[in-house]
Amino acid sequence: MPVAVEADIHSGLPAFTIVGLPDAAVQESRERVRAALVNSGFDFPLRRITVNLAPADLRKAGPGFDLGLAAALLAASGQITPESLAGRALCGELGLDGSLRPVRGAIVIADAARRAGCRGLVLPRDNESEAALVAGIDVTGADSLTQLVRDLTGEAELARHDCDATALLATPLGGGHDMSDVRGQHGAKRALEIAAAGGHNLLMIGPPGAGKSMLARRVPTILPPLSLEEALETTRVHSVAGLLGGRPLVTRRPFRAPHHSTSAPGLVGGGRGPSPGEVSLALNGVLFLDELSEFVRPALEALRQPLEEGVVEISRAQRAASFPARFMLIAATNPCPCGHAGDARRDCSCHPVAVARHQSKLSGPLLDRIDLVIRVEMPTRGQLADEKAESDSLAIRTRVVRARSVQARRLASCGRRCNAEMRAAQLRGLCDLDESALGALADARERIGLSMRGHDRALRVARTIADLAGSPRILREHATEALSYRDHRGGRQLSGAAA
View (cartoon, rainbow, N blue to C red):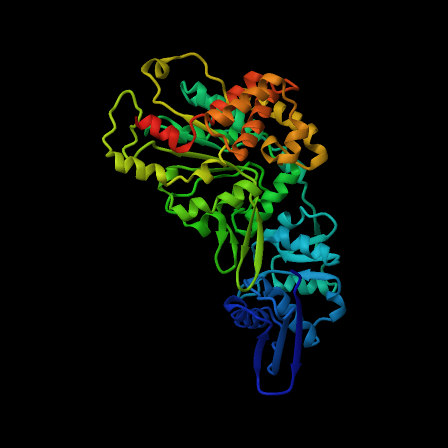
């Protein structure tokens, strides 16, 4: 939100008051601004100073107002002309020596300044590359308050900064994990390829040490590269959260793996701010929830709306916020507390009551929003010793990219990016099924009690399988494979494993 800084200086006992719902960080800026002005060689008026941050009913937070406050005081005291500030937005935290320190959300600030009609934006040097990603506004970076004043007075003009986002995205990713590191697990790799090709959610159930986490951490290596639109969208969220780490642009798909002790606000967002949670930080990437059944129930149930809508709506007394939450959920869990229910090599030592309690942590509505559920078994000795070359991430990614390009052409008219984002009305018009595939889906509704949401999710997965196969129509084998990932849903799969 654009904030106008108004300064008034008049006779009276020396005082410095900031009004307009400032938080503690903004109130403390009085001392930072005072020290920065004096230590930079400017006069600090020893009179009654009132600064208003408008609109007055919007709570102001953070140290980014320091630079605007200092410039307003310099203009009000006649040390610079108010006309030199016309059409410019200022943002930055001041050090006591007048140096400028970076702030969060520079790309969002630049976009807001452009929409507010500002022709230029001045912020700390460390933020200029990130802010310059926004077209339509002149972005300049300064190292200190003195540099800004010299620019405003015409002594030394600050250089306009440009940043080529396309060139940043073209930088080779290199290194990291690869699917060829995983021995065996061909069924799990197939399911992950389908999930990546259509943007579907997936749950892996299996004993400890079967390779669930190893598989999940390699999912980003088989996903398509970020498009420019996705990269900018993800950068906005990470910038606000302060996670860019000096990078101007997010060039890799995020992979977030929060600990199972994470609370509901930590997972979906919230707090006094409110601030984005893990589902938003995983935007256009992967959210990996290991030990899914160990997460607290409120946190898991809070995932239901983001998984369905792709957005998180948070309302607080002071403000409401909407955070994007389009991500792939990859989850892993053990079938029981000891982890060996259904394991052919080791017997389960859990009491049936403990197994039931473990399974009940994953509610039916949550499981119904997961597109694929697979059983991951311990690899055999032969699979571990097999020297035959495994499919690497590049080969799988090539097939995934090909399937995604087919989906992009099909969904271009409705503004969707992949099959997982299709709405129910679009499914009817874009999923061409032959008679045998229709029959398989109808049988599944009766045989395994498939809900209408489950039916639509199975249809999306079948469409993805057909895209991977290069088939314009969904055939019976595509529908059958899609249903195989839902045939043993939730408690039924876990119970069957325990039995």
